[in-house]
Image 1 (cartoon, one colour):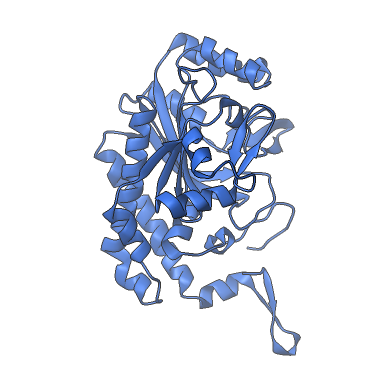
Image 2 (cartoon, one colour; image 1 turned 120 degrees about the vertical axis):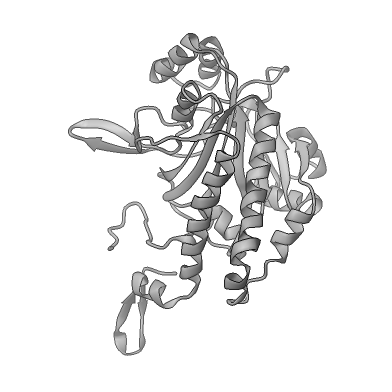
Length: 334
């Protein structure tokens, strides 16, 4: 939906008024409320605590270095440069040292890339960190998506179907298991097709086309694990080979819905990964110090809430999931 529409006679109607006229957005509000409520229900059943955290940080989770998947948003507050958080993963790891069962939050995250059909500059992030490793976090993340999907059918079916929104894809996901394959198996399934797998200098990534093909072959939901370590941010733990990361992406609907991984346990592990990813150690000295002082095996995940809405509503453009639109570099009211 464009910010402005020109009406017959040259009159212009702003987006926020058109949102009020479109019944879809009352359903988006219902979905927002459902995610907030059901997320709290899900984690309370597992003794995982909600934590309140600042949106500013000096340590972005996607620094300028190998494996970074986003650009940070830098701001200045009272003359001091800082960043708007792209993720609160580091703080959730800190929170795991305070909450034995783990911790979670749902709050805004910020990315500096140009918004497109899959990416927002400001989006809501449902993130959690728990004690344990990769298998533990994949299990709980899969259960979380299934919990939300079941709640959509149980609570919002009639509301969504009144707009002729087909929910059969949600039923199909809930009726089956989620396929799991490692990155090498994914590349083999894609026959190494250059349109599906990009090969860089020492590491590989899946393209959007590759994600779509994997979901078509093995979906609707597919967990892809053990990416090349240099293709992901430094904080993911190494597997036994020292070349792959203990991480995974859940491909569902529009593409990657959840990213998760096991973290480094010790400060020395962090310093090794920082060097390999060409990230200055000084920028994350506190993070290494935390793990020197309180080594702990944890894993966590993040889900873009608006991407979940895309999947539920079968909407191809994440920008349509915003009640109030935001684009960096553009002054928007309200």
